[in-house]
Amino acid sequence: NSATASSADSWRKVNFYNVYKDIADLLEDENYDDGSYGPVFVRLAWHSSGTFDTKTKTGGSDGATIRFAPESGHGANAGLDAARARLEPLKKKYPNISYGDLYTLAGVVAVQELGGPTVRWRPGRSDYKTAADCTPDGRLPDAAQGAGHVRDVFYRMGFNDQEIVALIGAHALGRCHSTRSGYEGPWNASPTVFTNFFFTELLDNTWVPKKWNGPFQYVDKNSGAFMMLPADMAFKTDPQFRKYVDKYATDQDAFFADFTKAFTKLLELGVKFPEDAPVYEFKTLE
Ligand code: CCH
Image 1 (cartoon, rainbow, N blue to C red):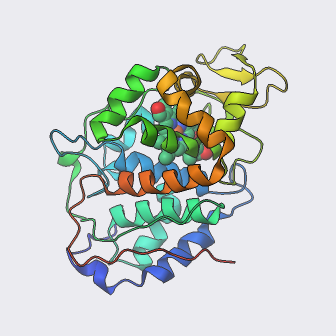
Image 2: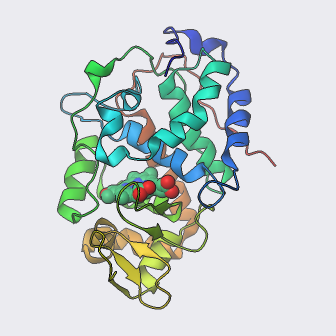
């Protein structure tokens, strides 16, 4: 993280259409995971933002404290250094973009380029926070816990049950890595395509405890190829969450429409945008 901090207004000099394209060009890599950095970019955007606390107005994507120790080393953030390293050349190429804008835009590009909805995005996050602004460990959800904990964490950010369910649909993307979280496996067979499959798989499979020495998690009984976290299972068993799971499993358009609203809200938590910051709706590349 040696690149210099951008000044408060410097985002005005950035052509974000070019940044979008350059991030899109970084997604594919046949030697990385399932062939795409998209899922880990979405996770970086979410963990940069999901530390927000409505009461103290601390945390969130403004200032991108996720890149500083101790926050970078929090257990929940294991593996996100790979995403930051992949994006670092763009901070060098576009020194006027803040890290907070770069990390959140990477999540937007990934959602869109992997087939998800258009996501409205604004620039203007600052680059001025330091390691002293890092949030305490424990603000991000613990996958070993259930509905009560998930609600505590997302209500603290200012989300309601419907928004929480929409957001967890991002678990259609990517996988768990035993070397990062300790959990293992993808949620479905197309982890580099944004779909409503988190919800369909959750409902359509019989989930059984995985037999292994790792942390307690579920695998699908038929193939054993797909997984659910204990926290994921809360969305099947909790009646208030389940209402929305049922809806999104049968109506992908409703999921996309609700996901994009909640994701933009997540990426903007606690950010004081300049009044004239433009709202972008980028077109996907062909
Ligand atoms: Fe998540 N997530 N997430 N998640 N997540 C993991 C991976 C991804 C929880 C736990 C985990 C959201 C909510 C939750 C993604 C997006 C979102 C992993 C595996 C765990 C554990 C990490 C590893 O080993 O690499 C829990 C608990 C919650 C809520 O209670 C939300 C919200 C989002 C985005 C909107 C994505 C994408 C991944 C895949 C990352 C990758 O590298 O493939």
